[in-house]
Length: 426
Ligand SMILES: Cc1ncc(COP(=O)(O)O)c(C=O)c1O
Image 1 (tube, rainbow, N blue to C red):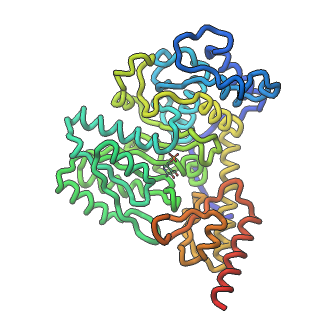
Image 2: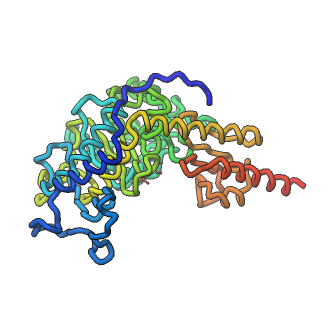
Image 3: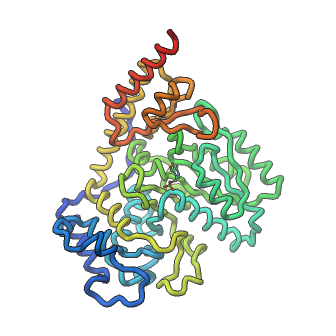
């Protein structure tokens, strides 16, 4: 593995034993109102179906997450805004969610103590759209902006949820070209795009920065983009899409401009259902305090504290799962796990290099993108590599080096690429 000297953020959350984790989760569940033996008359919900998911299964006593799943707490609302601002029936598990948000914002992204809000969203898509929704409403409220004056600016390698969000919110999209070889946003092209957007009447900007794009794992040069925005003197709000990179890049890269120490960053989206290996339905939305108010839905009159999220009702078990995983590893354990994943990624890169197959890889992210001309489509499809497009011939295929990707799998893949190439060239 290459020796990289990195200055690491001061992450320091302790790992806990499985007994401690179990005890805390069962305690949190006990602090919730229990549909089985306590009075709950007004909710349109209950525990999971009692025939299919029976509560007296003996293993449940040992299974904290499954018990939370069966108990089915609803985490509607945004709990970091204050405990009295949330549904009291589920305050036990909501406290675990508050701890997750605090840990991600303060330990991983270096936010000041108690200065961030957030919630467990359904995924990266929701967390990205939540940010765009907040900034659109902010421009409307603070500047009396018309939606036609607000633009969402993002690299064309950004996830499609950004275009989806701009479409939903009625905002103008400004996708930026990237350099083919490095996937970097071209600063001159960015400046030109900004100037022509201004010439077309756009005055307020929502800028999305990627910490790990979907197809390439590339990380946008946030300092360069910020410098251009400041030189042009336009009002902007910056959101980081760390749905892929959020649980790896801060650990593999160390300190970077991607943290709440950077005054230009207002919000960050993460996905726990990608690298953290939490169940689907666990995106994480983080934002500086003072911003959630722009999406307070006054009409949510039956929700204590009102609702600020896109999704409304959501499973508290998801928050429990994320909390359990983070506590199982502690910051040192998670860093060690990410170091191993990056070592494996580097070894795959080396094998590709030896095999004469070219690729793109950000050395801090576990995605390897291979030009389609380098490998036969049949082999790529056999191994479920993901193409950049299903609409036409792909230009790229990607490998994501996840924990299930073993050396033998890579060896077989490279052998198959070779075998196929030899057959084709005979
Ligand atoms: C960079 C990035 N952002 C956002 C998303 C959307 O995440 P989700 O599918 O969890 O909504 C993805 C998903 O792959 C992603 O890679």
